[in-house]
Image: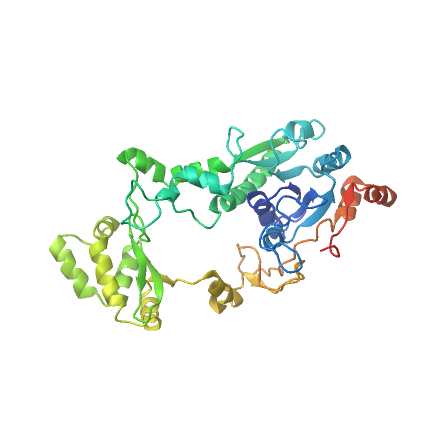
Length: 410
């Protein structure tokens, strides 16, 4: 944990992935992020998979280092308390609808410099989730084996909700941009970030959508090959599958050397009248001939020997792992300074916990902090932010408007 955002306070009213991710990244950089949920838990509070203690591992990890306030958000009094918290704080991240009780215009009437970031589905107000915007993006119909018939082949969805995580990261950036704008002008702002726009815009930023317009057709499926460059999965003599990528002349030279294919590649260049070193284009166009050479060579080595050769040569490669294998890999996890000691997780399950993805050389980064129990900080935040007396808070708790820590209720 770093304290680069120390002093910044954010109210987060969210569920699922994109919105909690935005708050998580801010919290990992030192912001005090208070997640506010309905007192029984938000829509994602019991999201699969649950531990024996009844705690969601998804919720636990997306809400690390945050504080939690629980209110009855189904009643007017609870909603007004939340609105007052937002106004008192001045910054909000949410994925509630534009015209909800947390509409920016309503809140800004009494806090004109409010900065809010609102995650939407589509720009026109339609609902969307990662899985549905991905269907619209075109990417699932690019995936799959090369031999599939384009007319009948099904889409292949990605397992990672990538658009959610990209949107969350973009929203953390948008929040800081809004705060900088306010520092310069004194003006607040609402920034609406449609999940669908992140997906469609990324396809254009990547040049993929313009490519389809230019060619006047869709790209063919190419299995696990890298589009426009040399790269694919190969199988070693002892049955280990690994990925190789050579996007630069230096990477290409190292890969050819490690596989022991200098003479064979030179002969293929002479036959075809091309230079693979000089051009990504030729490595991609003639990929099938090259893949056959490299797979034949891979079958002459056990993976450990080939990995050593690839490392010495400076090639870019990695062995395929299951996620269970990855989570236990000493190189990737236990020996990686990204991870710190397991904090006191509400789930009661101890496992490696991430610090900030960014690291500052020479700076000491603190240990990961746990996720809060639902409602754990309700009394503290209401007292500090709204100045409510203890008797008033006690009355709100007695009437069921405010929820307190659920530590002992699971």
